[in-house]
Image 1 (tube, one colour):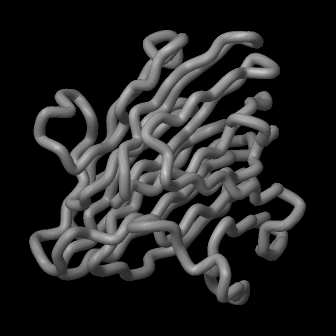
Image 2 (cartoon, one colour):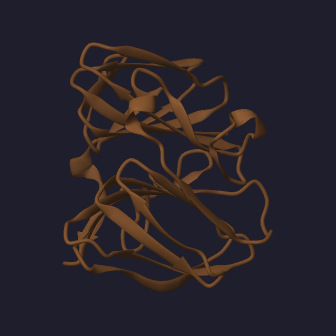
Amino acid sequence: MIELRSFDSLGGENHGWLDAKHHFSFAGYHDDARMGWGGLRVWNDDTIAPQSGFPPHPHRDMEIVTYVRQGAISHEDNLGNKGRTEAGDVQVMSAGTGIVHSEYNLEDEVTQIFQIWILPTRSGGSPDWGARPFPKGDRAGRFVTLASGFADDGDALPIRSDARVVGASLRAGESLDYPLGAGRHAYLVPATGAVRLGEVEVRARDGAAIRDQETVTVTALEDSELILVDTA
């Protein structure tokens, strides 16, 4: 099963400093048919104006993955963590028993991010934060694991969930297989470009909800940058 969720169909609101689009129910947007996908609870497509952002606020019991598409995001939390994550790179926050953080665009240009929330396998645990670069060249023609709850995924940022977040860059005409497996859910969004999944065309910032597929075959219709979340 592959269900297209076009960018135009997403919920959201433009707050001036923040233009937010929600692939799933979030904040003032509610759709009973879009409450989550497997362990994936939130996928927000956020455009943040220069010199603005999210002031300090709390979270708990959620794995929050931020993929920066353009510009940079600056993080600070009550654990003393600070960091600036640039376009193409990833930060992960395990909220655990509770964390208070801020996320600001301190740049002189617009910042665009995908903010992805994944349910943890179990509640509690000490909160944590981390970030690392993922050069786009390393993803050329292949999926690279950006964040993972599986110990054998090497250099991926750790999350506390039965899930992976992977990224790939494809040139027009290239195809790539992702081994999903029975009973798993995948949600794929092209950050740029356009791809085909079977007979379904998925354009930049559209979402594709996938299940009951042993293998997901992605064919690029244009040069494309992809993010896919794989959950139970």
